[in-house]
Image (cartoon, rainbow, N blue to C red; front, side):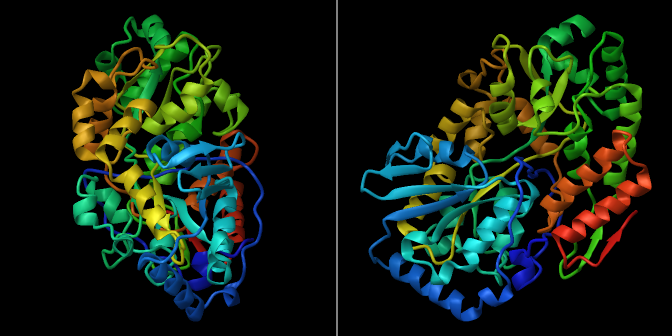
Length: 485
């Protein structure tokens, strides 16, 4: 399988501390096949030095490049930057090029996240960074929480410290939630990335189904029926009796378990994957729920047509588990009924899902533009307020989110006039940060794929375990052992 940047240079650092009271995580998905990244011999210390030299020259007042290359895994980053970066004058019809008022062009380089495709393409470009022509260099790239530590590792040195862009995290980003700054920093505490998102999760439910089954669609009353997993199981039985499903599928519940693992999938310096007991709890509970008929049997995972259809008016699915971004990017475009049909309440277990970080690539020839973009999207309270209002995002600004939880101007038409920010804030206050490793994306994807086949009755439990072991070693050849609880 593909050689990862982390295995080319070193195993990326793992954040081992659990941050009480807050969290983040992600697995935005799209499908495609991957390609190989260059081998270790393609990168070296002399290359890193020349890349630094180019960056330092531009930062010291040299002329900036004519092309800003921004790498991302979907179109979300482009839409958010376009919404807040006033220097953008227009964007091509196909969304690949934006032109700034000084004539500079932003080239949006987008590859799908799933199966490691995005990381492969990004890694290849970063390993060629030192020798690339200025207008071909990576200037800014997106990294999800599931693999942010791979890129912020100080020894890998592909992510510029924000201070090198003349951004002072303590002063310029003082309003950000502390956990987002911690996970964006290397082991020395140097912040090398910044995000506009904090991603506490909630339960999003159909108001019409709630009224039919429970006699009310009031979020407080429905929250009593979703208070914990034991209560949720009773609620699922009530829904089943009326011909409805609690959730679309087993994949919908994964993050509530995966966010509560006790240790990282792979410890720092190790080549052993440790599967946490919480993951096996998810498998066992999902099997029980599948057999009981609480999931829609036609839905076999996320990011497919059946899953999207489960969000439509024809569906019998009562609820989804989503952070704010999921409501805007997944539910809104797939709902074909009247506005106001959904509402939010507390999930059975606090969880987080998401967090896209902006990373300035070492060697960029556009440090001034990159600084402007990072600050516009992640450090400007007015812009973060705008993003929250226009996209129902839980943005990375404590004062903005405090105001949102108490302000009627943040009510959502899609949610029937409800202000969801109080529920987002409550979830955030209860979340514990799951320990991170650079292998999280692959482990999260492949464990669900392997045991999804088991839950659908296609293979037995032991075969699912064996299939996971095979798949994870194909994606990460340096892994030598998988330990099961």
